[in-house]
Amino acid sequence: KMIEYMGFSYIKALEKRANLHRGDLLGKLYDNYLAALNLGVTIKDRLRDVLKDVMYELKESYKTYIDKSAELAEIQFALLLLLPIVLLGFAFTFKTSITELLLPLLFIPPLIFVISTIQPGVDYNIKHNKYIYSLIIIPIAIFIPVQIAFRLIIIFSVLLFVSFFIYQQIQLANELEKSLPLLLKEIAEYLRLGYTIQNAIPRIKINSSKVNKVLSEILRQSNEISTPSKLFNMSMKVLFIISKSGSSSVALEELANAINEIVYAKQSLIRQLRLYDAMIILTPIMLWLAFGTLNKIVSSTLPAIDIIAAYSVGSVILFSKLSRFTLLYFPAILLLVVVLLILSFLPPVF
Image (cartoon, rainbow, N blue to C red; front, side, top):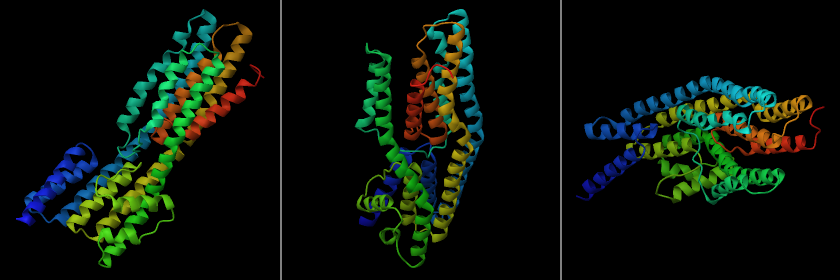
């Protein structure tokens, strides 16, 4: 009865996990594992086949996203640089309002939604801690009756503060993902020697103190695994299933090779979009030159700094989401702040 109760509890736990991850790749893995249990299929072979299918689907989603990312980057370039310059010409010529000049910014939320929809589902698991609530200050700062310079200082200070703490989690997630293939291959070697997964992990030392600390915490905790990397979390949960099914070391090596391809695909995405890093610098500089040139022809009372900053922030947010899988990427925001500071000390045009 005790054995039956333990088996029943284990199946219930798997069903709970399957319902929790319903619709994603990990949920598919749990569903197939449960089906193998219920049908009496050889779990070891079934799990290996399902694992291959899941990882193949994940790799294909990355390849598809890489193909589409260049098209989205071109749309961003046209929407947040070319179109604002055209509208700026109309604003100076026909004396249109600032509202019409800022209309392209309304396309940013739909574009973020589209990017989130087509992105692979194993990006980052950022903890929304107390720092994220600092963003509430930004809408307040927009309506504070102070000079534009002080208002911009408040907004960019908040963005830098919040993005810095998010960036720390992103760095940890990247380290965990890079260490995954080596970690899984080391576990596979220990499985060949007769060790269990739980006994193998403490014997593995990765050349990263942060990764070793995370592994120690995973061993101490028996509840849900939660790190900034969704790919790492999924892999650890797969290890949980493998440890229960008695799957061979070959499945772990295949998983390691698949994850290595995913990590490489993610790096190739960043390399492919590196040319569009120039958008961070190009957007404020081109708008600044356009304002200066048009002001020499026709004088205008349009708040140049506000408009340049608005389009520049929108460009950084979209680019960060597209290539770095996060809205607030600290290096990009820091670079933008430096560029805007330099432009503020330069004359309107050369």
